[in-house]
Image 1 (cartoon, rainbow, N blue to C red):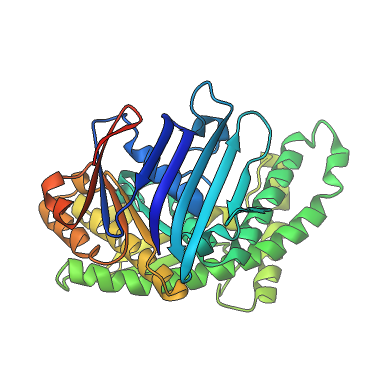
Image 2 (cartoon, rainbow, N blue to C red):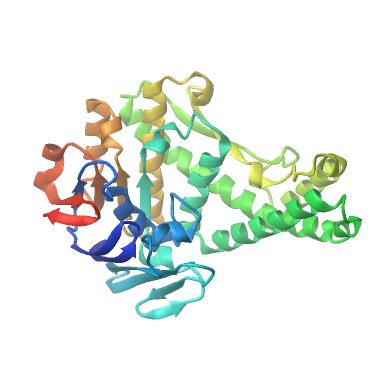
Length: 368
C-alpha cells in the first residue's frame, strides 16, 4: 500500500499543495506551526474519514475558504486508486469519493488506504484516562472491521439520545417512555462492541508482547487486560450471553442513572491495562517503560493490519522520534525498513538516505 501523490486545496493552512511521494520514507521538516502535522492529518483523514485532532470540520478548512479538497493517489489491492474528500463550511455534509465514485459513508476508505498513526500523545496513552485507550482500539478496529465501525457509530448515536433523556427527563417525564427501548438496543449493539474489542485486544497483546520482549532484551513481559461491564463474565462468550449480562447491569443501575442524570453502564466506559510482569504500567511504570510499551502497541497495531489486509499499512510518525532517547529511536527506525512511512520533526541526517525530504514553511513546500 503506497501513496504516490497527495493534493490539498484549502486544507488547514495549505492554500494549494501537491506532493510527489516516495514509496519508502517521506521526511517532513520545518519549524513549529508551519503545517507538518497537517500533512499527516490529511493522509489520516483520507484513511479513516475523520481527523485525529478535531471533531469540527470547520477547523480543517483554511480560514476564509468555503471548502477544502483532499485527494490521494494510492496503489493498493493490486491497482491504482484515488481517494478524495471534500469538506464544506457550515452544515453541508462532506463528500467522499473512491475512484471518482461518491460514497455514502467512510466505511470503504480503510480498504483502500490503511494507516497507523503515532504521535507524542500516544507515548503517554497508558498513563492517562481511559478515553485515549478506547480511541486506540476503536481507530484500529474501524479500519479492520467495517461492521465494527457501523456498530460503534450506532452505539454512540443511541448513547447520545439516552444521555439527553437522562439529562432532561425531570422537566418532561414523558421522555422516559422510550428509555427501555434504548437500553435494549444499547445492550444489543454493546455486545457486538465488547466481542470485537476483546478479540482485538487479545491479538494486540500477543503481538505487542513480542515487540516489547525484543525492545527490552527479554527482561520484561508485556500483557494486556481488558476491562468492560462488570456483569460480563466472559467477553469471548456468545454475543447473546453478553447482551443479557449488559441488560442485567442496566437494570441494577437504573435508579442510579436517573438520580445522576448520566449513563453509567455500557462499553463506552471500557478500558484496558498494560501490565509488565503483572504490574500495571499506569500506576508503577517508569517513563521509559511506558514509552517502550506504547511503541510496542503501535508496532503491534501495524502488524495486525498487515496480517489482516495482506498489505503494509502506511505509518504516520508525528514528531515522535524527538521524544525518544537514542536507543528507542533506533528501535523504531529498524521497524520501518518496509512499507511507506511519513515522519515529521525528526533528526534529518538519520533517515534522509533512505527516503525523500520535504521542507514545509507557512503551508508551502520550500524544497525537496
